[in-house]
Image 1 (cartoon, rainbow, N blue to C red):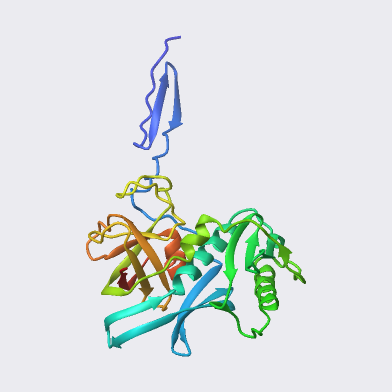
Image 2 (cartoon, helix red, strand yellow; image 1 turned 120 degrees about the vertical axis):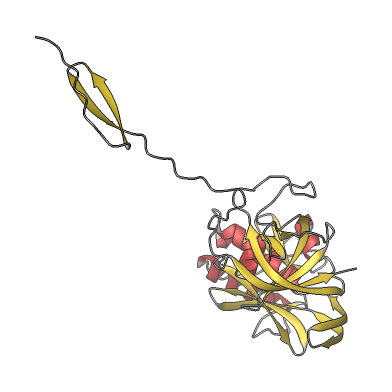
Length: 298
């Protein structure tokens, strides 16, 4: 019998594999989905721990919230003249946003890892300092700049109460009844947290966006590796190392960031902040938001 070649017409979405006397339809390889563009924001988990700045008895304060419940409050002092939206040499002594947002960022990182809230302890050094410690890492020094609603004149009981609140809300861990002796020196991270913040040199307003996923470890314009959970930001002109207090004008949340990169590269945006800073500002779901930038100087 004579073999014949039969050709069956198909659409462009299929490939035709032809054999003498037969015809087989082979589905074409599906079109590859477009990859994320450079700079495109991937979704990040919403933060568990938030910081809300406010004023307490006329002085700046920042309260730490977990699941909308207040845990503890960082206190600060300010002096200077503020008139409307203009500020005249407002001196911030121990800006409470610095330790509050650093502490919140560290707790958020811990809760995204495998950890146990039972490892949160109160340790007391030979010099009678009281610290919140997680395993071998000191997270927070309990002093007169950290308080809570219901605080007493007993610093040991206050430290235990604040720690028990955190243990309960972060991992349903049982309460502590005593402090633990400790001799380990404060970590470098803690020394950075307690660094002083100077006066407000200038105030800017504009729109903020955030970046992080996909950029882990890449070199920033300043040369240092990018850490999405670090409290850093990109600005087109501010010198590297400049500290800027960023306030989300939609919800009042604020964070102090350090400039270590250049950007944003999209017209109409003033600053591009890291994932950790965006979590502190409640900016993850918003994507962008109007902000006030207070440039801090020595």
